[in-house]
Amino acid sequence: MVEGVTLPKIAEKLEIHTSIAFYWRHKILNALRSLGFAKLRGIIESDETYFLESDKGKKDLTHRKPRKRGGKAKKRGISSEQISIVVAHDRNGTYYRKWLGVDESLLMKSTNLWMDRFNGVATKYIDNYLFWFRFLEMHKQLDKNLRRKTMILDACKQANFTNTAKLRA
Image 1 (cartoon, rainbow, N blue to C red):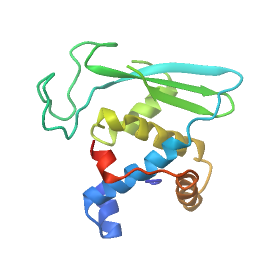
Image 2: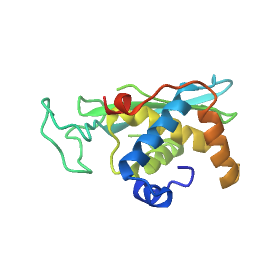
Image 3: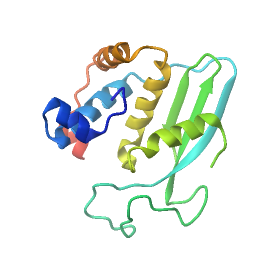
């Protein structure tokens, strides 16, 4: 996860099924998410971006027709087709990202480029991926091995009772 390796490659390396790699990824991300955000201080910069609302993996869509991967919104900006992600950071390097409901800033472009690698993220998992991005940004100065250890240790800091049934819901 620290290196941005795909689920199939993770599954192959660990000799597990891809679906197990997916659930393990989200257990770690839920654990990181449970740590919450640090408070922003001093000068704070904020912006928003929009991602196409995604019901990836749902079999019973009733509010719209299914889309092909990489679909586009019919309207720009705020609409029922997109969710808004607020991003803020202070000059001390503390980041905050939270989905609520197109920008030009470097911070937003880096978030968008990073999210593109997943070929669409289900809306219900988007906070997990934002916490993952936050973790990587906060620890980018560490070498790869120390980032791995830090991710596991951070994921173990607080009791987290996420199970497969919760992830599927």
